[in-house]
Length: 113
Length: 114
Image (cartoon, rainbow over all chains, first blue to last red; front, side, top):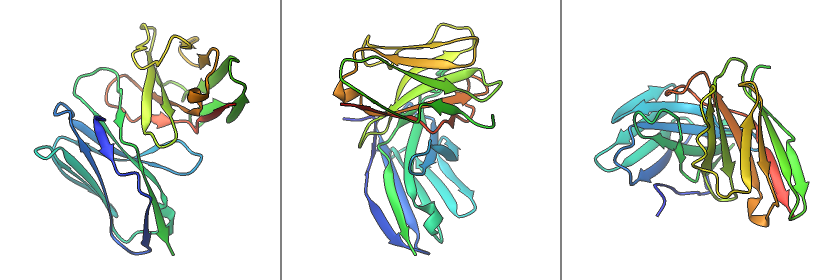
């Protein structure tokens, strides 16, 4: 069993819809939770970063962490065609020194105009 | 340059050949990471360099894989006697320091082993 599980999709929704992307994990030591966005033929770029449990909002994006359930989510409101990309969750235990991120498989998202 | 650069962008090789992949991190970034992204898989950590410290090689899948970082800047990932299962996108990332700084990724090298 992988430490981080993420449905690879593909997920296709109409423009303007609310998108929900999720990951589950098994290592309770994870403290830092991130979402990366990766466009085709590009490297991942950091989208959201959350420490421990709670919610974080940035424009149309909201990241949620539920450590009791070992479950994290990324919500995209008013989705746009430019949001079409692969979204990767990533996690990190505390005080590791090196940032050896543990990634989910990635969910491929398409927003249809 | 403004970001992390990698070369070549694509590499096709025959099984059994050696390949070298290059990464130029953001200027001034002391930490450098290599990851592998296989089809249908998330990114897998391979190796980590921080300053002049000994690299963390804990993610290298076999002794056919090695990496070096010269002068605390450019890094080269070498795969000897390539196998078909080595086909993947190899991504490099750098950060300002070793702690929880943002990792900036390059565009990757797409390796195909025939």
